Length: 325
Image (cartoon, rainbow, N blue to C red; front, side, top):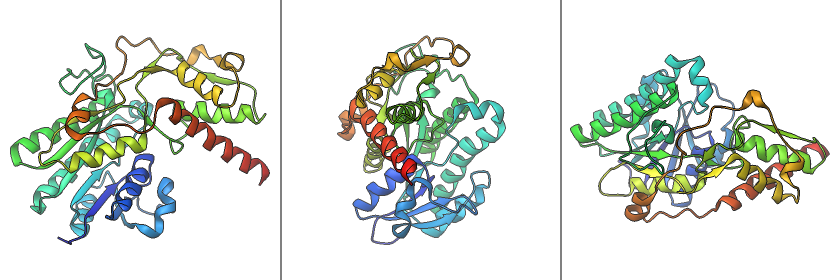
């Protein structure tokens, strides 16, 4: 294998992949990214085009994943490519399961066949806990997934564990709680909020309509979560970690913080659409990051308030630029 640290990122075009690529490049890695066949841009990582190598591959064609790994022969693999919008999994459960669990299996098979000591990071999701019996949730919390997406994520998470135990793979699963940034797609509630607040502050719209304001989430900055992913692969022993802030906030908290960034009161502009309101969750989705903090020495650098401000500022700047173009 090459002397220079080499990493392969599947899903490099997304929010997480772009922040991870930036981190690895800063650390002197040679970075390769897997992109979908015929994809014209690198999405969130477009600004890194001159600094990363790209290969084509498809989640539903596992051989393309194996070919990419054989070509790059990386020291580290970050398998981030997977569907991320949960509602879509209800419409296409078979496709979602194949992409998430099948894609993970293909990567792990290729790593095992290579026999070159590659280290692998696979992202699980806080949604594997579902209706958890406790909050905050930790690595040992029983899993009760409640969607096709969550079931597929749990299958991938468990597969990492059993293949690590049986074959000695250096494969780790990060149980990721909600992590956001200005690179988050707009169908996610946090970007709907930051984009809506930005538009209201510029006089482009008057109201922001949301659903469940009391839903609790554990929000972190995506760049911080990717730093934890990197730290996981620097450990002598592979293991699984909850990656979260450890603090829960409601959607209403997020909205109020966003409006405060532009000097507005949320209550004057926020509206609830009852058709968007979901049933109340029995257990708050909050993670316990004690293991990651203790063993990895990981500490998030961006606070909740700083995260919200970062997102609102980026959307204000983007909308202002678009309106004057």
